[in-house]
Structure formats: structure tokens, C-alpha cells
Picture (cartoon, helix red, strand yellow):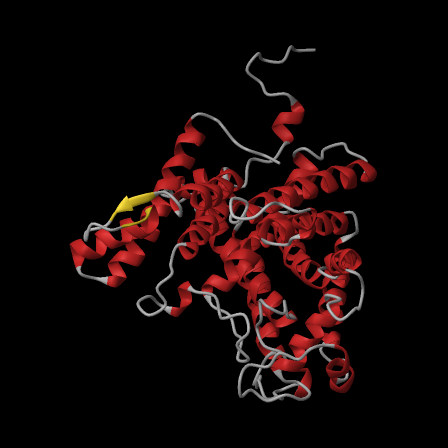
Length: 417
């Protein structure tokens, strides 16, 4: 029997699929987008797509900015099959996979709490209830855990879970208006109508699902409300489940057909999401009558989740076709950023909240402002343009963190939770 050549890779290594570079590039693009939109503040000068739709506007809707966070959920789900089958989860039992996912979700949750309290911890004492706060990483951790749970089921069951969760969320908007109004405190915008299918009705439903109406002592109310956040992270988890299905399709064939299939899924999801909110009127009504609900990040409506999942699939299909199938170059910066997305996000958030928004620099008129404010003021002073000041600062912020990511990548330093 001939001996194996010294340079021959072990069978296990040779069989292991190569890294999905397009997923790194997509993750890098999305984290760059998040860094950008987090630093754009001048609504009067910059395009509306760089800002969230105001939370409590009855019209609702979705901008580019509103889709950035759910794209992270999509990417986390897309990475799950790779991690479970060829990464850290290889050879694990189902019970071990669940426990490992729970630990990772808990770490993400605690990181999210850290970022949440960082903005006010120097202004008021920390209290135990701060641990029950929800924000970006907390929701990401919870959604990720349920994505991993779903991965233990066959693909058809996962499709049924996605449909079931979104249908259940849609059904909540059919709760009788009279019941909702008797329990929740309706919060319509000034002059906005109330009644079945209105913004006030849907926002009241959200209060009920979040258990805000339950008359309990402070501690119990906080705990019950914390569990009530399932009405947000479970719909979000469906976006990650679609991401996982997309990656599994890619793993069956890293070719143009996979890219086209995932793109077709994306188009279908976007169309269904558009139909669910077709003709939505804040005064009630639309294609589905009073069950017509808008694209809404505030409500995590089914239409919004389908739009996010569909556009995420289209973005992954485009990246996969360009990077992994066509082998196009020029995505190195995005890949470096994507490999360390969590480190960049946490580093950017902490540095901004603790340093960049607090330390002072001189202004052109001799006064002082935060580092962020001063840099914008100097750009405006030099260019005479409010657009250049706001957008220039945001692009500078992205560039700085891209350089950090490239430096970490070259040193082989990666932060994993």
C-alpha cells in the first residue's frame, strides 16, 4: 500500500468545504452600512434612506437603514449551517449543540447589555433591571438561539416553522380593537385616527404582546415584559432561518444555479411581503382590510420580516455570484471587515459612547464640542457644506474601522463569541 505524500491533506481536511468568502463580504458590507447609518444625523441634509423611519409615525414603512439590523440576523442564520456541519459544531450531539448555542446567545445578550448601559453608566448608578434591557445584540442573541434550534429539524419542518411564526404574528393584528383598547393605552400620533386596523390598534397589540398592560409589581412587570419580547425576536428568527436555508442551498452546489435559486427565493419573499402590506392606510384598510399591516421595524410585522429576508437573500445571491462563483477580486476590505464584524461593532459602539461623544475638541469659533461634533464642524468650516460635514464624518468613521479590521486580519486576530 503506497504511503501518503507528506504534503497531502488529511481526508477530513480535504473534504471540509472552503470558506464561503461571499458571506464574509456580505457581513463586511452590512457592518459598514451599520457604521455609516449610525453616524448620519442631519435629516435635513442627507437622504431619507440613511435614517430609520420614525418609530411612532402611523405611516411606518422601511428604509435602507431599517433593513441593516435584520440583515445581521440573516447572516447569523446563514453562518449557522457552516458552523454546525464544518466548524465548531462538527460531531456534537443535539443536546450539546443546544447548550453551546444557549451559551453563545447569553454572551451576546450580556455584550448587548454592556453596550446599552455604556451610554448612561457615568450619569446614573447601575441597577439590576439594566440586565433586562433589550437592544441590537440582545435580540441578535435570542434570534440566533432559535435559529440553531430550528436547524435540528428537517428543512421542510423549518419552512413550516417560518410560515407558522409569521402567520401567528400576522394573526395578532386581528385581535379585536375593542379588547385591545380596553387593555392597552392607545398612543396614536396627534390627529391620527383610531379604530380597527389603525396604527393605534397595532401599537396597542404590541403593548399587549409585550405585557405592558399587566398590573404587576415592578419586579414582576419587568420580568413578564422581558419574556414578552418573544413577539419581536421570534419573527426576527425567521429571517435567520431563511439565511440558513440559503446557505444549505449553496452547499449543495457552489455554482450559478445556486445563486439564481437564492435570488428567486429573495424575489418571492419580497413580493409576498409587499402583498401583505399592499395599500396599507394608517386609518385602517388595504388589500387585506384591517389585517393589512405596514413594513414596520417597530412592530416587527410579517411584511417587514419578509422584506428583510428577501432583500438579504438577494444580497447574498449577488455576493455569492460575484465572489465565490465568478471569483471577482476587490472585496478584500469587506472580507476583512466581515471576519471581525463583532469586534468592530462592539469597539465602535464603546469607543463612541465613552470617548468620541464625550471627549472635547476645539471648534473653529473657539468653543468646544465632542470629537464627533468638532470634526463635523471643521469639515463644514472648510467646505461650507452641511452635507459634506455629516456624510464626511460618517465615511471617516467607516474608514477608520475598516483599517482596524484590516490590521486585525493581517495579524490573524479574530474575536469569536
